[in-house]
Image (cartoon, rainbow, N blue to C red; front, side, top):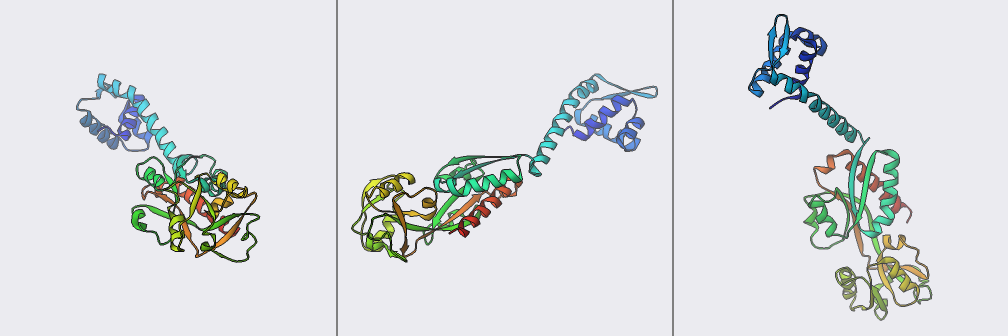
Length: 304
């Protein structure tokens, strides 16, 4: 194994011509230089220096190693500087995955603050819903994943191997047309009061929470329109084509023209979090990203 410190000493001996002069240049003693050269020769298995009078001369192997040493040391120096820059947040990369309503509310605020504080840190963004986003994190395809889970839902232990950074608690709200009989209701509305309505909901996989809540209230929703696109849901409700239940964060991410949000009882909440792997949590750029996401979540909660 060739060590970088040995290569630096070899270059000094080659340029100065003696162990004592190399020691003065490097700030160490002549015996220390001699010991390091012996260690280097033992590593490569051949002599690198021969004494000619008062000077040291490179052997053919020594000349070859000195030629390569410049590039090796330069590469190591560049690597050390790059790592120092990343550690000091002068550089770095974070791959972020978020679900859509998080991308349009929490993420912009967090990334703008991160860029202002650490302009050398670059963040990329892709969208995926949990559990897909969590799998991307575990498979090494992202560094931070925004995810959510509903209170009381089974499988809470599925994140036990991850670092979980809570961001905010999001409540489900009903969305009804402006002219709906419940649009001006003060206080909360029981979801059972919407039992006879035409519903707008997501795909079969995404509507599971809604169906579960409705069945708990004693009815199955009649779903006439299915879409996972939140602006489309709001547009359909605003046109008077039905009612919907959306996370509050999703409603805040679009302009609900022609629609009004109504507080629902019983309350159904989801916990929004940022996830990362334990080792990644030690990376300064990832830590800074988690911190800014947490601040964005706190600001979002304060405006409600």
